[in-house]
Amino acid sequence: MNASRRIGPQRAASVLAVPALLLVASLAGLILGLTGDGWRDAAASLLLALPVLIFLRSWLRRS
Image 1 (cartoon, rainbow, N blue to C red):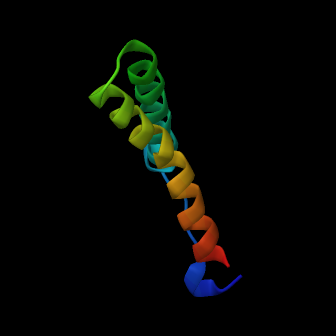
Image 2 (image 1 turned 30 degrees about the vertical axis):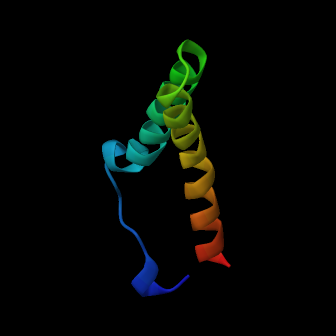
């Protein structure tokens, strides 16, 4: 590992911020998808696609 790429200790809030955001987005997408039609289905699709898009973005950046 490069010395310039080393990361020092981080706070738990900064480490868990993105996973917590993905959790909230996924739960909101599931709830919206199960409780309504129309715009709620569209919002649910967007919220449930967010974790997949973030995964693909980070996977492509590593390659």
